[in-house]
Image (cartoon, rainbow, N blue to C red; front, side, top):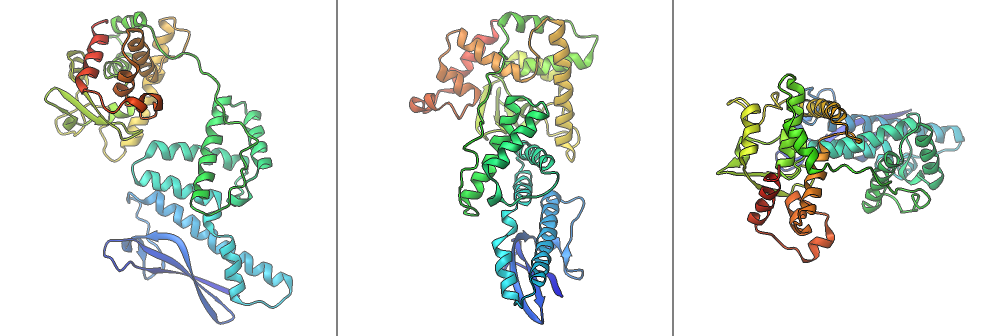
Length: 400
């Protein structure tokens, strides 16, 4: 029989991650296999020779993905030995190791994606992690929980996956969303030289359908601003967050929720977009202050607004607030007779559209919104004076 034990070799550098190894024993011959997993010394239980996962650790998702990876590796090692035994021929442990390395857990799609997701979350890129987690969940359902090796992904499988998504009545853009993220995972594995690119996505379409216009007219923005919502706190809060986003050149709600008191100094708001990490500065206007006066966080809180109150469950609080705000905005939109769903994202589209209608140059709009993918603009745009952007914002706000 085969014996497999988990070993931990700490890093010679204090505080750095060490590497996990598998000690494989077969017919009294011992071999060691380096796993792709690295952990900190305090995450290893020496006595029990296993991971020590603290439920309050900030790395718990990362460690849980490693635990699943270890279970997958051990199962495959045992399966390889079982296959060799069933063949009826004599074999040595080196053959087992060779076969195992051909099927490294790095090549497992589920494990590879789980580690990607854990790494994104570990580095605070929660939204990116969630998009890949959503893609993995969708593909797992398609595969009925049966993992697949990265090199086994082919055009036929992806065409079947596309048919599966269509059968579940998903929109063209949602299907494209999943396929694009799956393709990004595959391309990353190719770049890491884990697999050879066999171009499995060449026969599936990832094109997007043109969505309905999300921008509101200046007239509708005025109607929204003038609505008397004092009788319903939730509706008023949703409307005011929408207006604050519009006032701040289409600031995303995730950025609004995570604004800290230190971001506002000397009449200037400074923040970094969570989506791109791009720094932005906005001149603080009286209309912004009015909203802050209503929803200011407690003095003991580091945040500017009272959206996040629990520093431990901050992500859940933000998501719940985002869901409720958009739900109430949609109801307000129906009352205004809008022929499109009113969401926070409409504020960003509306600011850009109204700015364009007012003759503000595309380069100013692009810089003001923090776009880092406006390639045409960036060809000749190096930097704009912040005063130009703030002036553009004031011009729009004065129209209300």
